[in-house]
Image (cartoon, rainbow, N blue to C red; front, side, top):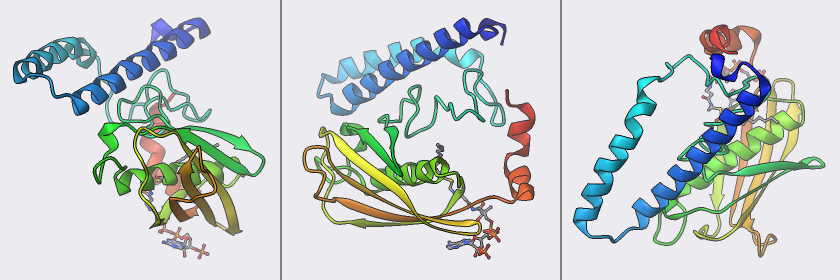
Length: 218
Ligand SMILES: CCCCCCCCCCCC(=O)SCCNC(=O)CCNC(=O)[C@H](O)C(C)(C)COP(=O)(O)OP(=O)(O)OC[C@H]1O[C@@H](n2cnc3c(N)ncnc32)[C@H](O)[C@@H]1OP(=O)(O)O
């Protein structure tokens, strides 16, 4: 895309994508928590459809990566867990602390399962990302083949969370990683624990799964 041929254009586009993501996340929170009059809901729906229409005019296909992404460099702006451009992502922020991946996020109303607490699938999603990150960080990237989650206490909404993940074992192509979710305020009280098994892809597996994307990616 000519618009982002220079680095300045790329940075501006990434900032705009994150700005749009912020707006969408706010919209989702407002739309999920609202008790506004019914007429306001209908008015908002019409306005939102109108606002979104230009975005749909130039959309990428399934095997096309986003022009602002850098797949091999790990920039995935629309990742549904960490992506600043994803309306769906909390987003979860992850950084490295020695051998441990440490994540933080706060879940809003859209992630609700039991009233006032997070949906169990959301906790599993966050932990899958955390464990996958820990695998990549340790030099053993792989795809999840199994994820076991133990829900010890419910995960509260609107509460800063602290997540951790680390690689526990590497056996040839099979990597085992473990992770936790706690509140930032009480990190010692583990709410959810997970153990994941990841498999490093063989070249032919990578080609079969991602060949169409890598062939067209930037
Ligand atoms: C900083 C960076 C940030 C990077 C941040 C990135 C974060 C990403 C986090 C998200 C990760 C995801 O969600 S990934 C998306 C969800 N996962 C998927 O869609 C994967 C679907 N599964 C598959 O496509 C397939 O299973 C493959 C290609 C992964 C593997 O093929 P396969 O035929 O099943 O396995 P195969 O190669 O024969 O076997 C490999 C080895 O794995 C073992 N194995 C296979 N399944 C299991 C299992 N459930 N539990 C134990 N072990 C297993 C086999 O015994 C074998 O061991 P041995 O005989 O070799 O000892």
